[in-house]
Image (cartoon, rainbow, N blue to C red):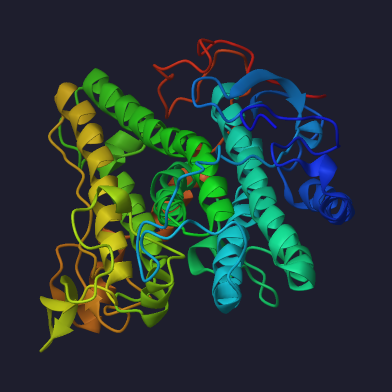
Length: 481
Ligand SMILES: [Fe+2]
Ligand SMILES: [Fe+2]
């Protein structure tokens, strides 16, 4: 079959030959109604009947894989799409380096793979749940569309993982697939698996920060799974990455538009001091220090998703050829990491200190470093917007020791600059470094819907980059009465 084309001969669009695999098709068709009732009850609240201008994947050719049209979200064609197979692909790292990739799961790695697929799968519906109330306060139809685009694609990512579970893991896989629809973000009894995915996303600043920082963790995880020796996982995640890029664009451009609007409003009002919070807020825009605090929070929460700096699980997954490193094939080393070391930031004598550790057990640390470098680039672009508008302020990422709940720094307190501090200092400065209840109240006060065509809430600038050549005054969502 032509893997670049998607077949629509079953209820589930796919390029995996679903109509020839009756057992799998049946299992997925059994799961489908439960999925739809999950979407109806946990997906975007209040907009299920609206017509949304969404892109739907219609192929996996990078040159033209999506088409745009109005669609009711429950009618979105969630499909199973894998990047094309490379017949000559070999395992790019670990103990099986150079061997042909696996088309089936090697028995000895089954439970490890299952765990990785389930954890990845769990984050996808979790973010939809976290964002389900945001439609009511969208600052424009353009932003509303972007939110829903992210939501339907995260839900498709759930399909991507459920496909792997049902195709390769038999009965266990079917049970895990059902459980993915049972856990709920933030639920005390049946929470989602990872911390950041149980936090709430109460407002649009949180949404933009989440898509910037937390979806970027997703990108790094998918990039390392895209290296996997288990080829179906590599191909699935590779296609997911094409969608993921838009999510981070939504975050980066969202924050950038807030910054732009704030600086423009400050200039118009003749306010040059970015710390003149009261007068800036009186303009109905978000002061830059509050944005920095939001960034501090979301960056720290996202760092926790990388797990402990030193991890034998991560080492085992690497040696097994299951989960590689970011840009594995571009790294110039032996891809086995038998004798090499990697500098890991650890607490030594009460101070964060770089210590050389075996590179194999420092896989998480390396991925987190790659993440930090990637995340930092966007801050540079935000700072350019501020500079261009003549305001004296710049964003910085806090130190990795700041506000952590997992790893080396879970039990200490550090300032954003990375100085270890005592509990009293932490408490005294908390509201300076992280969003205070006052900050949150102020942000909430701005969250009024702006659902008129071509209009934008006062606190955010109109976009510069159109969606599918449609300008900012296009009717991106036709809201059902
Ligand atoms: Fe995703
Ligand atoms: Fe995403």
